[in-house]
Image 1 (cartoon, one colour):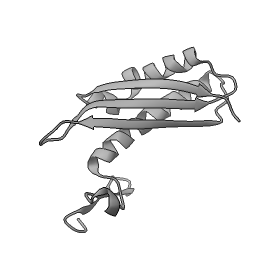
Image 2 (cartoon, rainbow, N blue to C red):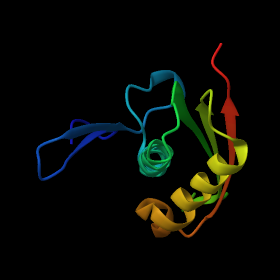
Image 3 (cartoon, helix red, strand yellow):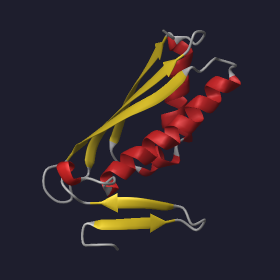
Image 4 (cartoon, rainbow, N blue to C red):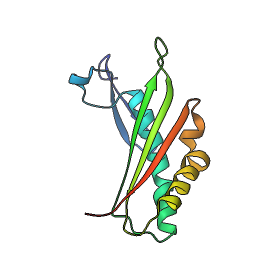
Length: 129
């Protein structure tokens, strides 16, 4: 603990993540709930990208937007999480990417499997500019 609103986590390999509980205007790091959304996005991203590469699709860019709706009161857990997967590719199809996204979230992502909340997702393929 650094202060009552600043913490850090270190894994067995020595990698460090800064955490804080400041208001939005004072933020220097992610909150634990932010980290949960980041972990879900990161976990899902790895499998989605690997599966598209296995299909030999060109990946010009890839990102996931993750937003959560929290319950009122305490604990303010996520009641719903919405994920938007965006792939920029000249040769991927909407259908194949949607299947990859579904497999990534519903079958392979350990973080998603660990959550009790409903997880919705969409997918989108963009063409390079």
